[in-house]
Amino acid sequence: MLSSPAPLTQALALARKDLRLERRTGETFLVTAPFGAVALMMVPLAVGPDTPLLRQLGPALFWVVVLLFGVLVTMRGSTIDGPAQRAMLSLSGVGPRVRLAGRAIGNSVLLLGFQVAVAPVAIVLYAPDVTGWIWMPPMMLLVAVGLGTLGALADQVSEGIAGRTVLGPLLVAPLTVPLLLGATGVLNATRHDSAPWPWLVLSLTVVLATALLSAWCAHHLEDPL
Amino acid sequence: MSSPGLTGPRWTGPADMFGRTLPAATALAAVVAIAAALLSPPDSLQGELVRLMYVHVPAAWTAFLAYAVTLLGGLVWLFRRTTVWDRLAAASAEAGVFFTGLAIAMGSIWGRPTWGVWWTWDARLVTTALLFFVYLGYLALRRAVDDPVARARRSAVFGVVAFAMVPLVHFSVVWWRTLHQPATLLRPEAPAIGGAMLVALLLSLIAFTLVYALIVRTRMRLGAVEDDLTSAELAEPGPVAGDAITPPRQEGSGSA
Image (cartoon, rainbow over all chains, first blue to last red; front, side, top):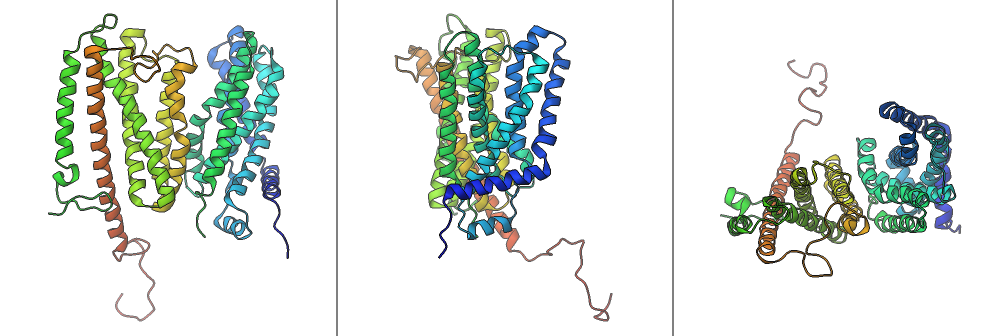
């Protein structure tokens, strides 16, 4: 008798499926990332050529674009699973927690890539003070995982709803505020010579709480077959 | 005459919808609270503006209570699957959004003469506004799902996640250096106000809690009536695809 793969293997397989779909559709890197870059370009037009002010605003705008446009990444069209697909996964023994974990892993990888794609644009356009840049990679990873998990949960909550792409951002965006505070707090702390690690711990706590809450919620969201 | 129920509609008139005892108690509490707010002394710094606090603070407290009840209703629904708990969660969220909006509006009116601005980028203000939008999202989610069971399940889960914002709002004045004053009553030390002002605030809190209870109970009863109406409409035989479409007829099966 064949034994079913471990949950982590199942989740990784689902994440690979999501990433393969993304490679075909290019929603994140060919649509959302350029859209984010356009947003970063429009702000200086609205603010005016005040270089010191833009230099100061740069990091904050980067994180705002990452969180708002990152929600669009998590709500991309290729994440829509049809009823037949969901039924097939359920009958194959893939539980709701594994489905959510797979989606969260796929989202996180894409969001990390999205940040890596948008960061150079922000650096070139705003020339921000890069003091404390060493804290950026762990923070980018935490933001990717936190937002990816929240997005996966919102994706399941709004599954099959006609206005999913409009409703999803409304559900997720306000809840990402602690991540925004943590991300901007790290750079502000390093600039003012104070310890940045409390902000990192705040973000890590938020990410862990989100993951645990999502894991607990996931099986309640499963539609009976 | 049958009595109104929370689990099923038994409405025969306004008195059945609103009840008698609770509206009377609410009206009495409101009159007493208004009198206490008007009779309390003006603040040495804020002057007469302090009276706005008798609406702003209880509105914020009641909003927190409403969201806690939404969380509770959602959690109980997830384990018991009884409609009444979903109805309670929904009614309480609607009331919570109303009281949050009221707290923001009163705070803004108070802020204009005191701080010189209608709005400022303060942690308490921003997190409260975000809380308002989180629960607007909760209500939008409820409207977007037609199936009652799926609606209850999804909104219960989102209600659990959304409640995480409430402690963030409450502790924002502790965790950040804010323009907004820290907690007046709910703090480790003695309350920051006393005497007639404290009495007026507590009376106002009782009145707001009763108003909240009245709103929630009435909304639950309305929800029960709405559900009953929907069930009755679905039970009636009718055209499947609307009146504009007529079923195909066989040739020569009667008059055209």
